[in-house]
Structures are given as structure tokens and as C-alpha cells.
Amino acid sequence: MSKSASSLSVPKSIRPRYDEIVALTDAFCQTHLNDEYAGLARRMAAALSRKRPSPLASGQPRTWACGILHALGQINFLSDPATKPHMPMAGICSAFGVGQSTASAKAAAIRKAINAYSFDPNWSLQSLTDQNPLLWMLDINGFVVDIRNAPQEIQQLALANGLIPYLPHDKS
Image (cartoon, rainbow, N blue to C red):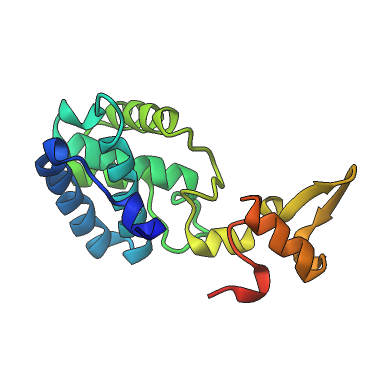
């Protein structure tokens, strides 16, 4: 099973709830954001559905959809006018009819459940991953090195050990 296929696997028992939430996030992303956010939202909903017990089993689907997009927005600096797309967090909340404090609390719970943080390579937009200099800094024998400038053999070792998301010269 490919990484993207396994990252979207959802237990049968929670599949109907997952489908409800993803329908909401997909519709929102199609109208206000982009396909990249929609894909991350699907992956995040799937990751939450695989938790035991799944937090998605209780609560309203619109609240979960809002929380997922709010969490992704925080991770990817969606409210920063310098980013594309750009949207205030309050805009996400109002679109789903969810209060800002509720959305913020749900997003915090989601980030905690999946150990997500700002610039997290697992939950970052590809465009932000490319611009994140910290992602490419590695400690090699006590020296901090930008792995993008290292020999290809070292880059391949870093990739094999999960230290970088892809080989810099193979960027798609």
C-alpha cells in the first residue's frame, strides 16, 4: 500500500462520520482554499479516525471540519497575508457556524492528538515545505548543515533515515 493510500485508510466503523467531515472540508477548500489544503484535511481526518477511540465519533461533523481546517491553517500560517491562499481564522469559523473559541479549542486538541506543530513537515503545504529553511538544517558531527548543499549521498542517507521529506534535486 502506498504512503498516500495508507494515510487515507479509515476504519469501517468510523467511515460514515469521516465521509461527512471530509465532504465539508472538501467543499470549503474548493470554495475558499485549494486542493492542497483539501488533501491535507482528508489526511488529518483519516489520522484522527484511526485513533483509539476515535475522537471523531462524538461531536458535530461541522465542528470537526472547522477544527481540522483551523489546525491546518495554524500549522501553515493561513491567516498571514503574505501566504497564498490567505484567510483569517474567523472566516473559517463563520463559514462553519462555529464559535472562534470552540474552533480554537478543537484545533488545539487535534494538534495535540497528532503531535502537529507549525511547519510540521507531515502537515505542511508543499509550498511552505520548500520555503522552510529549518527543515533542511541537520546536525552532522556537531555542525549544523543545510542538507540541500550536501553531497547527494548524504542527502540520500538523510532521506532514508526520515530526516528530510524528499531529495531537494528531485522536487516535483
